[in-house]
Image 1 (cartoon, one colour):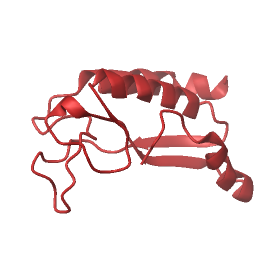
Image 2 (cartoon, rainbow, N blue to C red):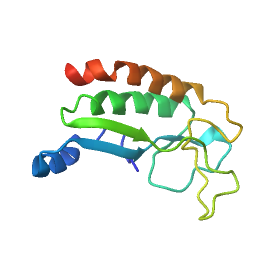
Image 3 (tube, rainbow, N blue to C red):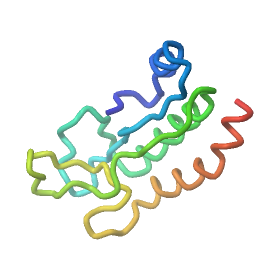
Image 4 (tube, one colour):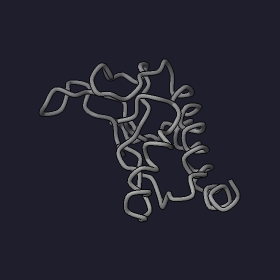
Length: 125
């Protein structure tokens, strides 16, 4: 999980330099504390409101898609974890939707826009 609002470009470049292969970034997220789940476990940054993860996500992805060796990224995860915790006790606001399946608009809107812009940003860093 991500600990910073900036992607680790130098670290991500190492596997590419060693192998000459592109890089796919998986399982990253930013979570909000006001979402109705504790969000007190995991390495992901815990921010105040849904607007804060969206702003961090925008900065993170803007920098990430400009990396020339990047082929894609994967947000973790579709829905929030249960407020009472999942099998291992984790209960975090990682989702694009809460358990009621209504999109967290700031985060979903940010992902929609950056996905739309990502090809142009990747070609013209």
